[in-house]
Length: 267
Length: 80
Image (cartoon, rainbow over the protein chains, first blue to last red):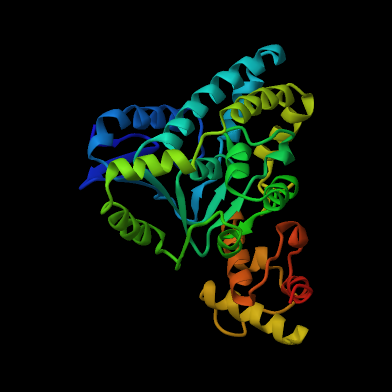
């Protein structure tokens, strides 16, 4: 499928480059609707791979790449079932999103996240599954999950640990603070810094350069330098589900969904 | 090294320019959430603009609860 327009995202293949655009109101939250369409997207990889050099993932939403997992949906779904049944539902969702992230992580063509605005939680985890992040200078990155009593669940910590030093990983995780694009580039999270509104244009220019090289060599190099931390990813799912059973999590989720303050991602 | 007064004025100028307000329409004691009517994403944008302008990192938790330009400028000053 060379093009697709869904309710939360769309993609189009053109001259060897796939552009996946997240476009889900209000802030590209990753819930069951976006997950189902991401599954469609990765299911198309097998057919697209032979004629694809690069995939660019970006957002059509103003001021945000993705705010992360859909916490409102998570809360309402969890609240609608008995406490004992919650972990099974959460685990099923995590297994599906991990399969998507792993597929993006290991696809033979090069993947670029062109990021502007807020890139939080699951949004950052999606960007981390990509080979490169090209960030607008107004982009901000964060893992605010600890405020809710759990850890990032879409593969974030193992992938961040794979790519970066422990100082930054722990700072992001333990403070939940947002980090700007300039600092993120200095720490190695961001590959290229773009001017305001220029991330997608620079990602396209980078894709054109990457496309010049031999596909077999490119794919072999990617496989060599970017192994998937499978064991840690499995442990992440287990730990997330274990933490999710605590009553404090539902209380924190409730507080978050009812918070209309200017910094709802901070406790 | 900027003085606190200079930092405060630069914060006010930056906010006025970004939100297309007349120069001098903002005062140090103004509540910027009320005056600018900004939401959470715009708050983050403003934080990025301030960090980029002053060349600093300003962790969100240091400005959590801050709502006036004067206190914001003081937090920035402590990072310069």
